[in-house]
Image (tube, rainbow, N blue to C red; front, side, top):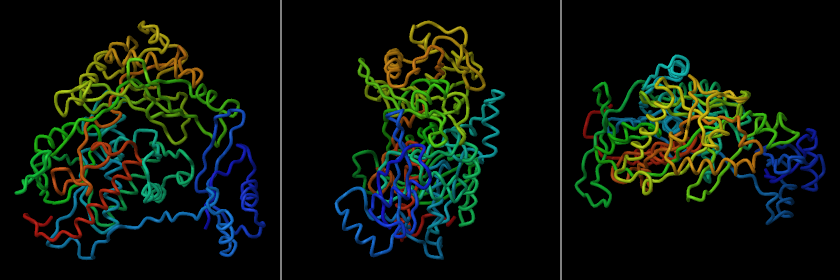
Length: 560
């Protein structure tokens, strides 16, 4: 099998033109092309009047022809052997596992990272126990809508907490910039397709699923984990971990220890020497608990800002010109960055084409926004976070969890500015740039539910952030015509762009100072999005499996 790269064809090419192009590029006869499959399809829209599709194609030829082609194109990037993207498990448990010398591994959190970690462990025969503080995805959806429709917040079941994680109520983006030499990303996508995701996520350049499809997919993966011997418990919040000190405390971070189990909020105790922490970026009480118990944690940078909404048609036209609305292009997205005079950087984050701005708080009397799209991406508005990078050294020094204190302060202020009823504060872009409060909406209707309260967003963020965003929006308008339109709407605030802490780990994927504890995913600072979180989940599951199968010490407590 051969991989052909960088095959370019017009946007509106006919179906038969692709095999014709393959034959032409390889300089072979038609009958020598036995079959082909599209591995990746993307587009180049830099020239709006000449948008082209770009293909990567896997081609099957007879063995003799393939050998000649490889020799002919040796050293050229156009033709290469197709890489083997088959996932191979690093370990497989014996049939008797778990036996009386080993307790079951525990996965805390059932977002994308925890889901893939638990699935990989179950597929290796390790029968994990999964603990999720929130509810199953169906109940969680009802609880989330209760806030959006009736202003009733469920603090343990919402956009942040529950089966599927924060990615469930998002655009469902499935691409990442992480290097994937071991094809773990392909493993994640293949599992998603097996669970009901559209097959096109395997080959389109920027795959996404959308909330409704994610719900069923997550349920199917859960069923597979259970079928393989795993156990999944909802409404199970971890109150504390059991951390036993080591005799040799040579760590230069904090006193070294090892996990022996955990206690749930119900009082139940589970014993295990292998625990994956996939708790997400909003598990603030869990961060405090880990810090109190001596687990090494560092403060890390994150970003703050607003959501901006435009008519999707404005973004489509700016990006695709006359081809706006083409079915292969779909709803247009964008990615923007501007380096400001005050030294700050402003960038777009979590852009949701044809989507909505959603209430994403997980704490009483606080307001947080996020973006969400369905698979169809056919809502009227486009939205994205426009955020400013901040760092612990400059903006929240003092202690490890100071970033959380800042988040809470800003979210509480947004609650007050919104009217203390879970409305979000909002302002028209034109008024924001002119530094005057908004009093009425114009052509762009904000999508945030339960509702918005117009006013002055300059009060919602620190002055440096307001100045930076005011400088950036006109600059973004130079790249996307209409971005600075007066009627566009800013909705505040966005604070949960990433985790404000990093739960550091070593080369074995275990905590720097706590053996058997595997920090993973977004909450630990090792992922940013569904795909990278899933990849990280598989990595820690592999590391745990290799350790657990070589583990010979008899456990200190009863077998689970």
